[in-house]
Image (cartoon, rainbow, N blue to C red; front, side, top):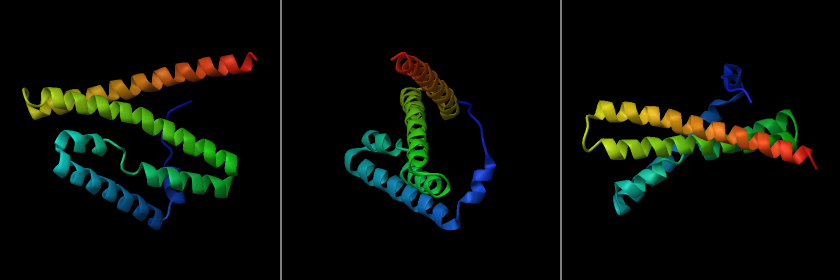
Length: 144
C-alpha cells in the first residue's frame, strides 16, 4: 500500500458532509471536555485522543463507495480507514505520553516538538508492524 494524498476526493464531498464532520467532531470534543471536568484532565485527555471526526468520516466513506462501486468495496474502504485511524491513534498515545512526561519539567516548545516526533515515530512504527503482519497473513492465507 502506498501512502499518498489525492485532493480530487475533496470535490466528491458536499458542504453538508463537511457540516456533519464538524458537528460530530465538536460533539465528541465537547464530550471529552465534560468528562475532563468530572473526572480530571488525564481521563478527559484519553477521550480527546479519540479521532473526533472518525465516526463521520468512516460513515461517509462507506456511503460514497457504495454509491460509486458496491457494498463489498464500501466495507473494504471503511475497514481500511478504520485501520488507519487505529494506527494514527497509537501515534496520538505516544504524543500524549511524551507531553505528559516532559511538560512539567521542560519548556512547552521542547515538549510539543518531542511529542510530535513521538507521534511520527509511533504511528510510523505501528504502520510498519501492520504492513509486516499483513504480508505474513497474506502469505499464510495463500499457502492453504
